[in-house]
Length: 499
Ligand code: XMP
Image (cartoon, rainbow, N blue to C red; front, side, top):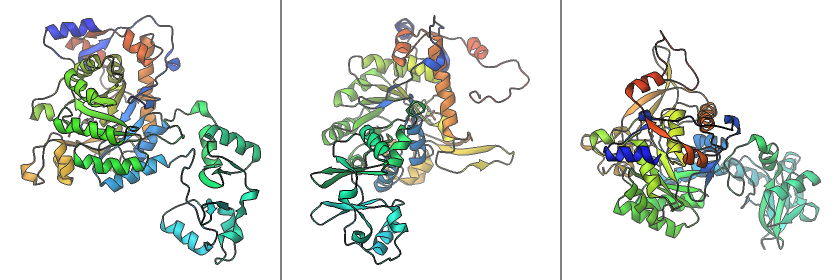
């Protein structure tokens, strides 16, 4: 590995995905047996090394849920108000529960009619409610059954609830695993957690059954409470802190400081301040494309560094500003610079197929942020569009495109643009279309299959072993031509290849 990059250094040359491939090495492992777990950041693990990009045509709640269900993570974009972004984070975190930390409660005197109205107004679909009196003690529990069999809308909770003495309860420190065992044994669908008679949480059997019934089939990326993991973009400067406060209150697992130029005074001050305010929430900082910048972000406290300036399919930064290093060299250089730091590097942008993913991981990336390859799936925001020739596509645009910058001054600032006057914007991204791809889980299955295959060819049981063993070499343009399908009259579609 070092040899290739030393030669390139001497030639003052940088490489990207299609410039290199990897040697095939002796192997004692088959692809399905490889372990693709990795880290997003200092404390957040991933079961697959794939992250959906914080772009308004890629990641909102639906994509973030699907990503975490498949073992990756989604970064909710910030092209919306802080309140709306926080609601989307709430939606992901509440897709599945282990422990419900603060259940909605009702008082013993509350009237059935009023409680049902309150639930409807707040768009709550559940009707399982602990009944808590004015002193904070748990008096009982009402469930859907109690409401269904109540014929008097004027009845009070007191009249329809199951009393505390008849409930199965557990101490506040009960884990999801213990709760599941208790509920299987007692055949109770609700388990209230009590701390000296006061409510300190609740488990529902429907949630736990879903989490535990076939653990081997599930690669879900969840937190300690078995809730799906999610990240959110915050940008930098004062606006970042307003977002971060609401996101943190909704249990966001990681913040991404998603700026085009991460190595700035404001970017570094934002890392420091976010870490001071939220030491328990990991900060992914970026973007950068060289080792010194990566190290400055890590020194400021970043828990992961996003590397990529201009490699993205919709990026024009390199053409407009003349800035940014070819992605494989940028990743490799950042990884080398962060040796000994325990701060993962996440490769952001330019990934065109699973082979590119293997190469980014092999040169040291811990995960891959992906836009284009996910933008055409069902879970990305936006509708399918049928073209006159029958092709089905979805709209995909850069976060530095004119359309996005016009939407918000905050987003325009990401590319150093303050004004919202269209004529005065200098975009660094474009808008376009990508082919419709169906459910994201199918795309992820192909990507992970390709990554496992690359690991198999390297005899790598884990991603860390891939990084130790891989031997990249430079490829000639004839070698690249030979690598793609060639010399056929036409190519029939494959689920994991297009050009
Ligand atoms: P892919 O290649 O996966 O890249 O589509 C997605 C990444 O590109 C970055 N990005 C941009 N970069 N101008 C840029 O220079 C833009 O308008 C833009 N929008 C997104 C971002 O890092 C994303 O994850």
